[in-house]
Length: 276
Image (cartoon, rainbow, N blue to C red; front, side, top):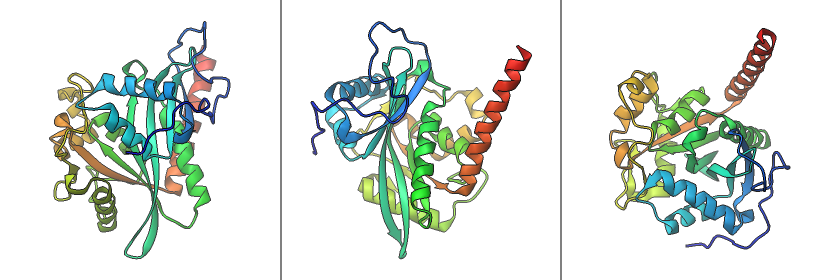
C-alpha cells in the first residue's frame, strides 16, 4: 500500500481561501464550501477527519482500505461548513487516460464520496466537481472526456442522472456499445474479478463498504421516481454493497446544461428578492 503523506503543510484551497481549516470561535452555519485539494497536500488531521465522516456512514470498511483508495487518487474535493470550517464531506478524484479500439479517451473516476446528512440537498460538491470537469475538457478539447462513477446508493446515482444529459445506464435509453466497452475496460482494470459485466455491477468478494442501515433507504415513495426505481432494479444488491458502474459524457451539452442551471438559479434568487 502506498502511504499517504502526513505531517505536510495544510492543504492548499482552490476556493474560498479565507476558510483554511476549522475557525476557532466560529459557529457552524449549515452552508457548505467546496475546496479542491491535491491528495499529496493533505495533512494527517484532514485525513483523520475524512475517515471519521466516512466510517460514520459506511459499514464493512477499514482505515487501511480507505487510505489505500485515497493514495490512488490525484485530487479530493473537501466539503466544509462555511461557519466553523469543520469537514462535513468529501469526494476523491482520479484522472485516467486510456484507449479503446485505438481511440483515446479520458475518464474521471469518482472514488469515495460522502456528505454529512445534515447537509444533504446542497450543491457545493456538484458545482466544484463540474468546474473541475469543465476545466479538464477545455484543456483537452480533442479527446473525449467521461465521468466514471460507481454507486452503491441511489443518491450517488442521482448525481449523474440529474446532472449529466448524456449518462448510462439509464431507464429511458439503451447503452451504446462503445460506452459498454469503456465501462467494461475501466471496471475490469480497477476491480478485476469483482466486476460482473453481465450484470453491470461490482460484487466484491471481500467487503468493500456498504451504507449503514437507515442511510438513504429506498422506500415506496423513492421508488416512484423513475431514476431511483431504475437504480434499484439494475443494482438489487446495493444494500449489501454492490456498486452500479456508470459513465457520463463531459461535453458541450453538459456545459450548456450547467450554465442554464446557474442562470435559472440566479433568476429564481432575484425573483425571490423582488417578492420579499
